[in-house]
Length: 350
Image 1 (tube, one colour):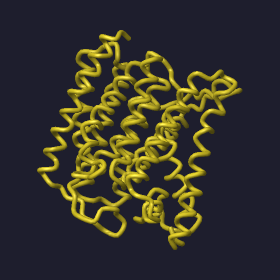
Image 2 (cartoon, helix red, strand yellow):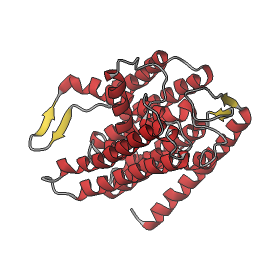
Image 3 (cartoon, one colour):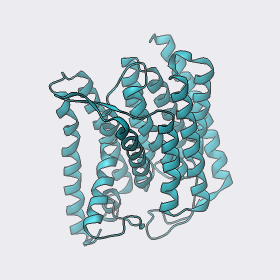
């Protein structure tokens, strides 16, 4: 890619960021309010739905790609599948913001969107396993892909509890993914990640460090859903195959928090669908670590995950299986710090 082409792409992304910011300002004026309750961190009613700006910017950019950037498109069924599934998750998540659906209803709506993506053919049947080479799983690939999309979608939704946390993590992940995809010539992944980043750039100043508006489910679920799909698309359906491990490394902080919390609550016999404030990031904030610091720590996790992705891409095949393990020690250290602060603060039950 030439410097002139990169400049044009960045200018286009800047225009989309401005579009996102405009839509966010409109959503602030519309005032769909998120009211405080015991499981939330904010103390005053705050508008939500700022993620609509991210959605509008992303879909506008995708429409331009579809019309004018033939070299960056996937094969027609896959491209249309990505668009349809993205529109569907955005629509159901926005309705969730308006109606505050139960988790069961929310999960059902997410499942429909994930199935729409898989129905278009976007699922992985052939995994590249170190020392085994190709591992063909056949029809099992479809439910595994659905489970992956649901995991990441909900993980980003669960982590969206402090100003700028989910949006900042998604932005860093999108920037790293766009950079890696550009270097490797994976053009759809590059453009789609760039469009997602542009939408978040337009939103983030309204949410961090002081929140004039929240992303809402329409933002957090959409970002998680798009990143999950990009992980699959970039790995098998773009012009150049990237690794399925890139997105897990980029979202290592988010995924560790959510999976750890689910396991801990399941072992304690708690109802997993019940609202709570037991995520590590929530416990950290309750234990006295400033919310801004918790957010910046998670941005650091995402950045470290991006560095691990760069190491992974440069490593020889013999070393690649071990690189993702580098993301684990920071998470274990963070767990230890949060656990110690919780004990010191008298928080015995998470």
